[in-house]
Image 1 (cartoon, rainbow, N blue to C red):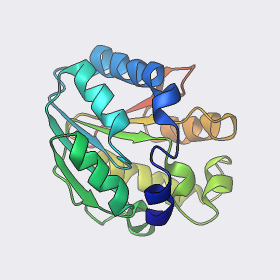
Image 2 (spheres, rainbow, N blue to C red; image 1 turned 90 degrees about the vertical axis):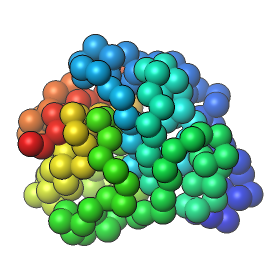
Image 3 (cartoon, helix red, strand yellow; image 1 turned 30 degrees about the vertical axis):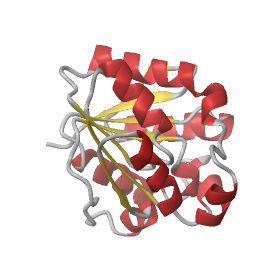
Image 4 (cartoon, rainbow, N blue to C red; image 1 turned 180 degrees about the vertical axis):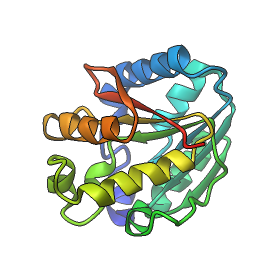
Amino acid sequence: MDRLFAACPDFYHMKDYGDERMAAIAAVIRSEVADCRSLGDVSVYEGYALGLVARDLGCTDLVGCDLSTVALERARSSLHGTFVPFDLNRLYDDPAVTLPIPRPDVLLVCECLYYVGPVANLAWSRPWINRSRKLAFIGALQRHARKAVLIQHFGARQKQAIGDLVTEAGGRQAEDRWGIWLLPAAS
């Protein structure tokens, strides 16, 4: 990923289509989570999404992790926060692993699950594949947030399948167009 991101800044074209989606995420957090002061992103990429949501909410306490050190350097250069390398597959493989970031009020999981786990894109588009492992992973994410976990995937193949798993884990759909699901943090 580092070589790809180094060669192609904004590889996912976040600046081309992300503003409306990030505004929807911020609106869900604003209406559903009381007093969100800190925000985390488990796949922070270059910090674009986290930065937009944080600015919309007025959050200044930002944390994030990503597999790519190139992406993390870009996030650090555009945002003030704590950004560290971490492969979400470690948490998927062992839900007892602790994320290397402080627990934020809200933890964002946006458009990244199709990289997590074996045959990830296929598995996340079909809820019955590795169901118990995915539910354990979602539970681990819930333990790493103080108030809520927001999962967003709008791809046609993943949207409903991920939603089914989130619902089973105690969450609910908060917005349909962008596939935004909200889970309470584990107590």
